[in-house]
Image (tube, rainbow, N blue to C red; front, top):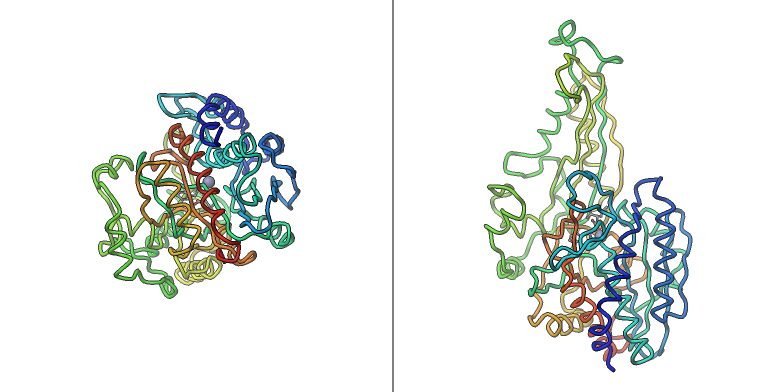
Length: 460
Ligand code: BES
Ligand code: ZN
């Protein structure tokens, strides 16, 4: 039997196992789910063992553990570092889920559960591809190292120190990550760029105590009003960011790249519907595809203070808060951008309030050379598994480890996603389209096979 026949024969078992994985609520941001993080890590290690990976272990970090796997078969063949994350986002708001988030449910051709697409289903596709090699050829055609982390959804804080402390263990010729989506069910895409992220929290302090807005209103500056006015000065009405220096390091899109991106299939009406909006917004001189993938952004992710319970309360509150994040593009640096926004907020703060800015987390931008040989293996694999040639594309989300692998291990990453744009990542009713899961396994099998034609050196 060949590995692809094995995959076709075992779809039911694979699906049952995926359900078991998805039923563990491994939410990295919530302390109460710490035992579930441990459980998911142990479960995944056991599946690596089932897949025939001779060395599979749970390794500690300063935060949630890493699941490590190693299968070295032939030193003349390339070594691939497979990255994924077994942690998931919180499932709130629960009332908007049509089925319970940790009770994986098949709905039509989809499996619905938190983490189905991001990233448990996608990383599991690779694990099953490896198992198919074990069951048929006895071993994969290339050397494999796996690193599955438990903190991706909270900024991968402890991963960099882990990578730096384990450079020899993780040494490889190229990395592969399936933690993104393709353009459509039959329209694969290979990503060559991801945005970075700078995330800050702002506190604006006014009066020491909440005040009666009738007694003091008009003569004491309301910190929520002040914060809103400050936020309004971060961006103009067309979406250009007005923080001094913000665009200094932004690499302009070359005309050739704009021409390439313009060829990416894009249906404006379908996009509006998918987003649930009636009109697009943002920098008019850029297309929607460019705005969402290749341009930096600034979004207020949350704003609070004062009275927000039902009914009215006439209060002049003492504090106001906002969470603000910026998606970054090459060559912006997260720390530098966080400093720029922090300096600017303090500079424009009226003398009537006090402003504090905290840096929450960040992630570096990533760019992979489009002519990297490993992308050719991915190109062939996608073409055969999906029946169409993949399109080269950039994405707006962030996977901070890509830059870390370049910096600390000197390797490039193949960004080979199997999700769909409407998978509801980080939202209620997250799903994975099952045909994509199985085609993902097939793509992974073929990718490893084609990659074995290359020498390790040719991938550097
Ligand atoms: N899977 C996503 C990243 C992604 C989404 C890539 C869509 C391409 C397209 C990942 O799990 C994620 O959500 N990452 C965070 C990173 C952040 C916490 C540093 C993100 O992008 O918000
Ligand atoms: Zn993810």
